[in-house]
Amino acid sequence: MNRKKSREVAMKLLFEISINKNSISDTIEHYKENNEIENLDFEYIERILRGIDENMEYIDSKIEESSKKWKISRISKINITILRMAAYEIFFEKDIPCKVSANEAVELAKSYAEENSFSFVNGVIGNLINSSEEK
Image (tube, rainbow, N blue to C red):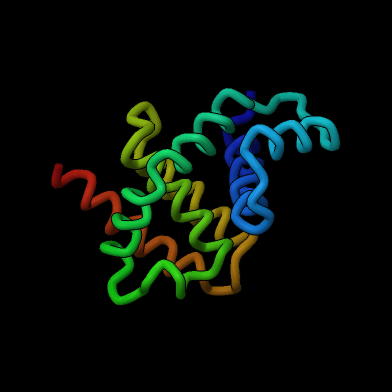
């Protein structure tokens, strides 16, 4: 199964959920019905989506602490989506190395976010990793 592609799909679905407010189950089912799903790890995708949903308050507080003077409401929807995924992986998916989460998030930002957003995303994730190591 392709983890990189699964992470990208999870990001797209999380972004979609943040916009249209559909349930995780409905969003995943709709995706499966309308897209090529071979080589995707839907167990991982669903775990990420549900984990973020269940831990949103904690994740957002960590992002706000790590984004120095940026309130969640000021961060673009795509950037906050990418940051939430990275934060979830850093704090809750201990089998995924922090450097992998950071690199994948920066690559997603380069592909999907505003032109120079990847440097902001990289800085926040660096702070998140430092915060996770202080525990």
